Image (cartoon, rainbow, N blue to C red; front, side, top):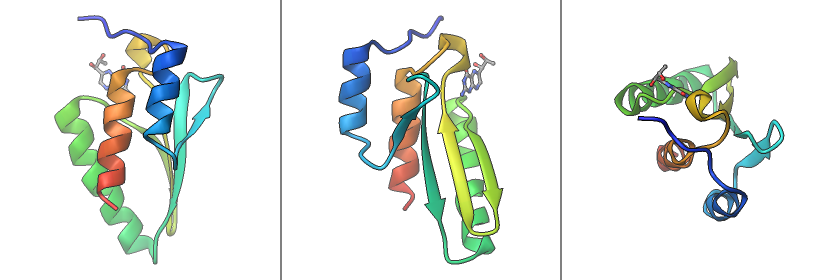
Length: 96
Ligand code: HBI
């Protein structure tokens, strides 16, 4: 089933609930950077997100160096932001 890109109003509502995230890529993505105590904590976080991503069939773009994890969420199938990105960002924040 095709997944719809969020409208501008839906994006605004989404971002109101995700104050730690920023819009990116001309509103086609959202991103957040996380800092942890050390690499082990960062990698544990990445591992837990990987399990969420597989369960949701919705996978982040991410970068990790030592204790920093940078995550970008977008929905390739929608060509921009979808509800899946909002749901995944919310689930990621709940891991903290
Ligand atoms: N993850 N972020 C993201 N965006 C997608 O469109 C996507 C995905 N994971 C799997 C997936 N789509 C599959 O449903 C196929 O569409 C590739």
